[in-house]
Length: 233
Image 1 (tube, rainbow, N blue to C red):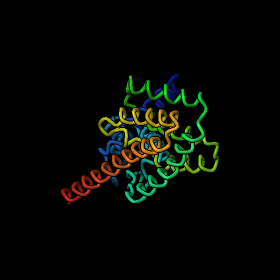
Image 2 (tube, rainbow, N blue to C red):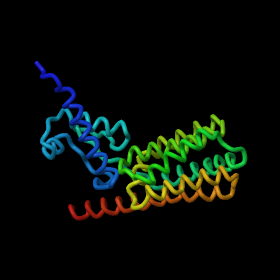
Image 3 (tube, rainbow, N blue to C red):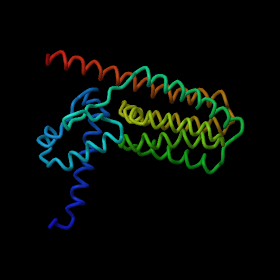
């Protein structure tokens, strides 16, 4: 008979494995194409196959890894051109959003909630990249929601879903959390001041810094992966 609390213990162990492996992937400690096997992870962490299998399944659902034959997975291969195209579309949409809000305004309650949230993060930064990525998505989607343009909001949400893993990478760049906070506050201040040109400049600065951080991280990871394969061959 299974001891009380065994399920909870297994869930906690799986959560810890997911957090550890996700951090390695996001920080590019595992280069694109890196192979993860149940056997190797069981040996490394000294655990049974069950929590490892559950952790790998969770990472695959988050689209951080791809399943391949023989009970193994590989870290997803990023496509620099695709990422660049997604960011270009996102920038075009969000330039329209902030210009519209600067000209027409946005609900004061939404404005205040966003401003207070990002001021608080600036005052007391924290290091959970996934939470920051989700909060960043919420910031930009709340601005889009304030335009009352449902089609635009739907498109932006779809883009954000595809960019989520890259957003986590963005927040690993030195100083990025503080810069994001200041940029978000600047965007809100420009909107409130009805400064459309300033709001466009602020949103462009925010999005382009993220795109540059991600492209640099991808290129560095691909170089490391290539050098690693060359050294082992």
